Length: 479
Figure 1: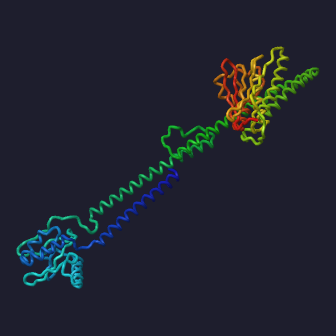
Figure 2 (figure 1 turned 90 degrees about the horizontal axis):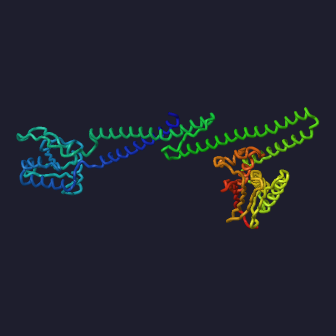
Figure 3 (figure 1 turned 120 degrees about the vertical axis):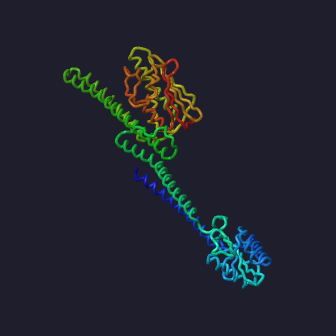
């Protein structure tokens, strides 16, 4: 268990204990207040009836009749004291209760009240004897054994009428202790479970960070996790982040490998040409042409790498200006059409035909250089891979505020398994790796340029053979 677990545990435990003490203290204070506020004498209607019955019995039947009545008066319990403050049945009367009786009688005499005063009354026998009768609330404590035998009769304490009203008894105190102990144990268990619940994903996340720092970016918070709180969401976000980092690192390693391979090939050919020039000085012209061609190839590759790096470092287009997309594509198609005608004449065969279709002028805001580079890569790629003597169709349309550029050819197309990787740098489909010049950066650059302008580029095979590249650019308008 880590430090975080114990912090959670102690905080939750202290909160539980404080709540328990607070609630228990409130109940204890309430019980104490009730005990202090509860009078020892009963002044309710039943007490008044019992005192009236005692007065009538003493007046008409005398002391023996009253003494016979007292054992039958259990609820409420009636007590009668003679002139020497002894209870007629010999039951013990606590001193504090006796003081309260005398005080209430004195207060009643001073106020001139002859009726019941808080459950105590003075009685007068047939011979003028003075007695004090009262009714107590606390039956269990007030009832006791008779201190001595009177007229040969032993009065035992009757059955327990009810539980004591003042103060908790031993059983009550034991019950309260058991409840408090169970509450503390439940608080301990709840605090431990809650602390473990919170600290477990944090420990797992810490282990994942340590593994990531060591180079292991494998996911650790899979979708099978049953929990659904913020900590698990944080772990899944970490999985996505680590997967993204792993993909970027793999892409960087692959890019470094591909760049090294692409640069090594022209360098090797240049070195071979230099060696041939040393061996055959009479072929220096051919050698210089070969070196120039390879240097141009390297310059083009480095330029494409710089463009790709700039787009990945800053995905937003920094320069935006109004432009006519139809005019831009028309100029590009004219260049490709001219180069295709020159290539067909050099090969002695039918030239590739490049058709351009546009219904109206389409205006938008963007970087003309980047858009030219992206569209050039797509159109030249279609002309490069198109069938000899075939047709490459380029169209520009405006649909609901979105400019759509379609580039279609009738080349060999792309294998379905290669379509997901077509926009990766240095990727070249298996059908075009031989006999066609290129580095596999054209579509990667095109995708990043289109995405920087808020658009989308999609590549799909055509029915009957060939490839269709569709570019959509938003926020377009008619010129």
